[in-house]
Image 1 (cartoon, rainbow over the protein chains, first blue to last red):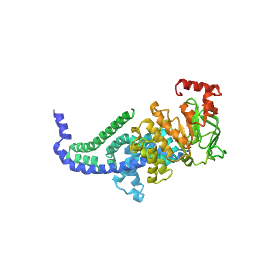
Image 2: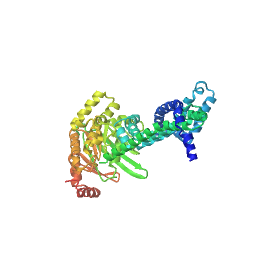
Image 3: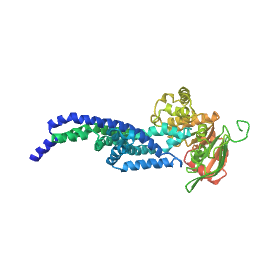
Image 4: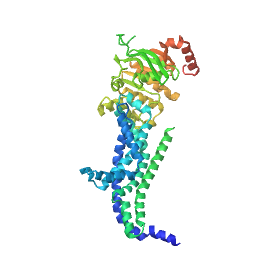
Length: 238
Length: 256
């Protein structure tokens, strides 16, 4: 009974919990900001790289190879290593403007680099899932390669990949906590500071609750979209 | 017989075209000419090369040997402007291939707007005109999956017509349809033939081919084994293989 009491006291002390909320909330606002900016950038860059990866013809091969190298590198490297590269490496280069950004900016860059690689693969799967006959129909109407992509292939691809894409965004949202290692004053780091001064761990629970409050609705929304798509596909089978 | 009266060069001129998929030869020295305002039907078993031949004519498939001219222009060389060529040639597929994320109206308007650079008003007016012609004006704002197969195929035909093509290629356009939906689609094709559209059809509808075609070609193993006017092909085919094919099709009840 003593051990249980200790656990409750260390993690679930209601007084500490309440006390930690303002501090951790201040940090979590930084997480929210990084999420939104990184997600917007990822949506755009990943689509661009996915399109480059699918470019036809021999002339485009160097670009395809670059796109593949990019996704391989950033999917294969732990995000914490990328964070060190960006957050310590870029300032260390002493390149003036780009070496004197805030840790939050480097955090956003890290998240964008890594998640662009994941989401590129998601988009690519989506583009490849659009049946070749759709491309043939578009091209046979006299639409150019780019017009076919823009009006026929990509709109269908994007609709299909929204659920897996949101899934990756759940990961991105959680990983905003990792960039605390390069000195971003976000929820996890402020929770840690609070814990050190206050002598218990309730502040971590506060941080966890904040993350859960935004990732769970997103996960449920993703499930809803998947279910809706299945429903539609069943309806189309008739 | 040429409606132009000049009787000179055929509108479509295919000379010695061969094509392979890997080791498999799918077209073998195919030669074919189609005069303007004529309807040519390609018949033959599945895999005989009908679809591939049609897809070669608008360069959806690359021709490896031989030459194709359309409207006097040689299309089988490197520098041909494929987009410009395809704007003159409409193709309709067995599986309709409507764009599922666009309404019927948007399907019909897309290529005129983007490839012919028509204004929205002009493209929309023309699209409504075409949809009225096939009696589907009321479905303009629906998505394709709300339409029957026959309705979808008719939309696919007018989508191609919206580009005002000089040649229509129809690739087994009734093969995926329920029998009771076939006649609406064939009525539209008949109407096109009567309006003087130059058309090449790959088809299994033998009685329809006999009715609308100026010429029927029987393909077998990637070659045109026999060609002639429909009466001759259907009543006194010269080749043994043609006779066999037709008797199999007749036994299948595809021709009354």
